[in-house]
Length: 387
Ligand code: SF4
Image (cartoon, rainbow, N blue to C red; front, top):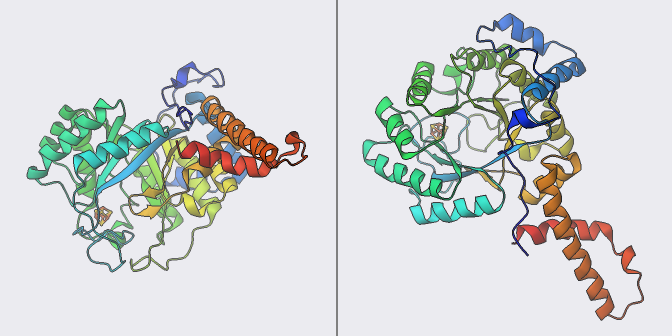
């Protein structure tokens, strides 16, 4: 069977879709106040989602979700002290450290990601910052992944302007560097680099002409105003990040935040909605923490304006929903419908045929049309994923 199962098609130009509500004006602002954002958080849930979805439709196809794959190219032993992160050398989380992956392995994983439907391949290294001696290795990696026809993204820690330029020259499309939380809460989470260090790296990435991927993490024990503060920082940057990952903290045993109180899922969905309202043209990524969300919560996040996910069973070091679960959810929601349908129908038909043949072989007098639909559905995803 050909490898046609594909989750995403982010090559669809948003402006070309007939489902869009025409934009009255761009309404792009960079001067949000905390009070305005707090007021959005205080809106009735339905009103907030309606507002976010209306803005979403002005800029994007509401039924298309961009899909990226993330690969850890160097795992653990990081000198930084980010309190949420199992890769910090300071916390005993039992994480297996891995040296820099060889380029061949990275290429292999990138090919798999492309075959599974990802359009962007993100590579992350647990570094405070890349050393100059690492640069030829990472720039070569960018060139090789680009040759596969994938968009490239990297997250390597802080960057100097020269390093940003080298990555740009190698063809890197996106650089990820999150602000994590509000400036006020930041020192409770990280002490080994400053908020300004992060802003400087974003500046260097922009100056080099790359797209910026920057967001944060909620559920780290921050206040509601801190969530507003994070979104305000992102929305008031001179250019909005093209990609805004909103992560729900994944609590990893051994990290200082392993027993922090859970964030109410509605608060998470509100955060997504407000990111969409504040940064209307950015891709808002439903990022880490998705595994702990049921389908209904994820669906509400898409309704709130999330239009990007990571696809694959691992997000650097924490797990992510199995890919076939994503295919099933997309199919139920009609997301990326053309691509998802071609995957699902083909796989489903194959499984159905196999079951029919097996029943005939067993000489059972069974009406093939009554073959278990549920069983066939369950197997369909497995078949497609194995190709
Ligand atoms: S988040 Fe990044 S910089 Fe911080 S400890 Fe983890 S790998 Fe290191």
